Amino acid sequence: MAEVLVMPQLGNTVESCLITAWRVEVGQPVDPSTVLCEIETDKSAMEVPAGLSGLLLARLAEVGDEVPVKAPLAVIGQPGDDISAWTGAEPPAAVAPTDSEPAAVALPEPIAVAVPEPVPVAVPEALPPPAPAVGSSLPFAPAVGMGQTGPKAASPRARELAAVYGIAIDSLTGSGPRGRVIERDVLAAAAGQGSAAASSLVTPDPAPEPVAPEPLVDDSAPAEPSGPTGTTRAVQTQSQPEAGRPDSGSGIGGRVRLADLIGQTARSQAEPDQPSAPPAPAAPPPPDQPLPPEPVPTSGAISATHPALAGPIDDPSFPGPVDQTVLRGIRQLVAGRMLASLSNHAQLTFDSSAPATNLLNLRARLKRSDPVLGMNGVTIGDLVAYAAVQTARQHAGLNATLADGVLSRYAEVHLGLAVDTPRGLLVPTVRFASRLGLRQFSSQTKDLAAKAQSGSVSPDLLSGATFTVTNLGAFGIESFTPILNSPQVAILGVNAIRPQPTIRPDGGLAVEQRIGFSLTVDHAVVDGADAARFLADLVALVADIDIAVLD
Image 1 (cartoon, rainbow, N blue to C red):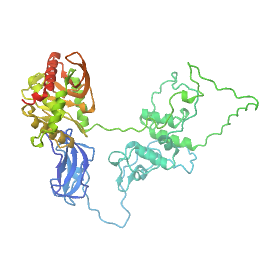
Image 2 (image 1 turned 180 degrees about the vertical axis):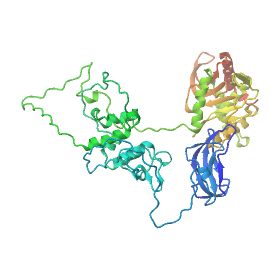
Image 3 (image 1 turned 120 degrees about the vertical axis):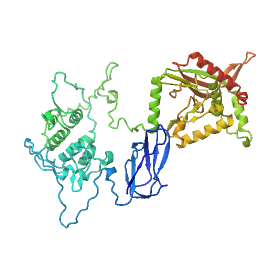
């Protein structure tokens, strides 16, 4: 008996997961340890094992779908198992073999609608003859996508256009969701058959010759009480002149539809144009008379004889290649949190700097230390974050969260570390960071950062921080405005170390290495003086970091 595999819940706060890849195709065997697919939450990425033995009978979601937790994901069973309860398809029925022709598909009776007689026109051999108009009293034909194996998924507009051009929907490859045939597929097929009406919609016309500008809108013309829709009106403008508009359409209340316009366009382009007398050529000047000079535009006007000065070039490839991505997963979560943070907190940033001489010297000493001590991997970022934890422990007003009008101050510092990952910004939490020594603190931060970058960090470790540090100093940033990691009320930004002029005690000038800090607080609950005191204590601790780490 077939069994359904549901989307696992990867954390208490996870509500849905994004499918990033399928490892097994339908019909392949699986065992409990087989990795069925890869999924991504708004916080981490994981592999989903099958957990069952058998064949993968159906995949109930595709790559890119966002599936709620505990929702059906796949069906595993044995050949012949009925899976219609999950896929929605009819169970297979036994059909007696026969040598005669297959039975005709039962189609609904056509509805007879009175329509005006079509005007016979001469259609060139290169153009496909238009099919009967939609809504006529003729019976349905396979041209609207009703094959012997059942109708193919297609949009209503695609079926209307297929009827106009006489194209079988079943013969088209759909580019819509799940292979659905949509309007552009029919237009592309019609253009491939040589239909001038479809080509005018899918292929841009060549750039016209420069002409004198004319008014685009006639304000004196009365508004039409009923007419084409916005999309139909745009197609009508590019596919036929004003005089060729249909007075009434096949839509409700005589509303002009896209099929009406395309059908009329095909007929109007099939009719030969009336020959018109060519304009008389201008008489050439006498050989001994020089050509008149080109008029030079003045400063207040632009000459029409200089197309390059008349405006931007009409390039049909405008605006060029565009890469569009729907926000999903972690990127969607970060975007929502940033907007919510700016909307819910009165954010204010304070900048300061500290002498970095002792910081750099201590880092050099630790790097040269014996590996047995486990201190040679401590970085500048570790030292600064460690100093920030010790400072936050002394300032409970900044080691706090604000949610639903309640300010919570914490005795322990749970440090959030902003980590740049291939999937976006993640902030894992070093729990009880205020209890750790420098070696333990450095080891835990590196372990969390590695798991965040690989996507294997536990979702439960991506929340619960009471104070956050974000470090952009490695990129040379001298100052920036960190955004609060809501519901926290403070976040410390670490900037680059750079030389700055300073005055020596004897009054002479010198150059000193200094590291910058940018502290953002929620001014609704943190006063400016409190933020200034925090920065003053942090600067003093970093200036004497070689002594501070001995605590």
